[in-house]
Every structure is written in C-alpha cells, then in structure tokens.
Length: 169
Image (cartoon, rainbow, N blue to C red; front, side):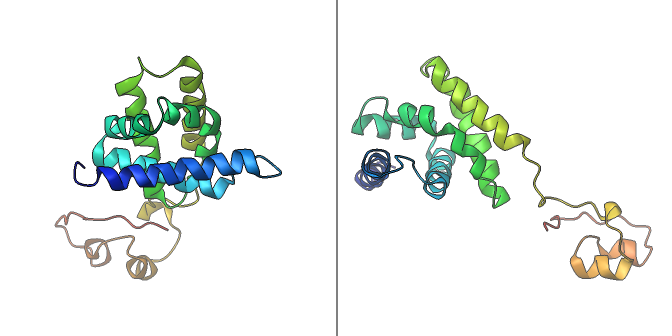
C-alpha cells in the first residue's frame, strides 16, 4: 500500500468529489443508488485487501472523519449491494469487521446507521445462493448436467468424493 498511497489518495479524492457534487449540485440532492453501490463495494474490497485502518487513515488524510460522515448519511444504501453474492459478503464482513475494530472511534449515530444498513442487507433473501441437490426437484441426469451433484450419486457408488465447489444459480 505504501507504493500506491498517492494513487489511493487520488481515487478517494475522486470518490468524495463525486459524492459532494451529487449532494450539492444536483436538483434532487440525492446520490444515485448505483454510485453508492459501487462506492460501498470499493470500500469493502479496500478493507478486505488492506484493512479498515488503512481506509480510515487514507480518508482522514483527505479530511478528518470524512469516511464516517459518508457512512452516517449513506449507510442506508448498503441494501443495494446484493449482487453478485461475493460483493454482498465482502460488504457485510468488511463493515462488520471495521465496526468491531474501531467501535470506540465511531460515533453512536454512525454506528446506528451502519448497523441498520448491514442488518437490512443481511436480512434480504436472495434468489441466488447455494442450492442443495436434495432440494432440487429434477432427475439425476439434469442434476448432473447442472453440476448440483457429483458422479458418486449418479452411479450409486459407495465411496465418498469430496465436492470442491457448490452450484450457484
């Protein structure tokens, strides 16, 4: 991260400039959900790769507390990060980890908004996800074609073969 500190700073400045523009220079004064989806996904990926301290410190170099100001006002947009499943998981894990690591430095209002947004995101039932082969009402040949079951089931073998992946629909 040390080598890319200037680049990270430029990216964060561009993000916060864009947020400022939408909040202050548009007729609706609303930041589009698609932009907040991308920003929350970026923040989550950044925290997964470099840690929440790195994101907070990089944002504080731009303006002290700017990340928490954005999270206070835009945590409700977390619910839009529902696809793909990986991004949803990254957002849930990264923000929860940040709250656990920095709870003493985050204001109560920011914590309330962030927890509310994460609960709303986690509570969403997604139509995608892992599917158990026993829950699918198809014949064995279709399950094999879909990759939902392994060859052991199809040929009634008695040996167990570890599956290395799950089918995501």
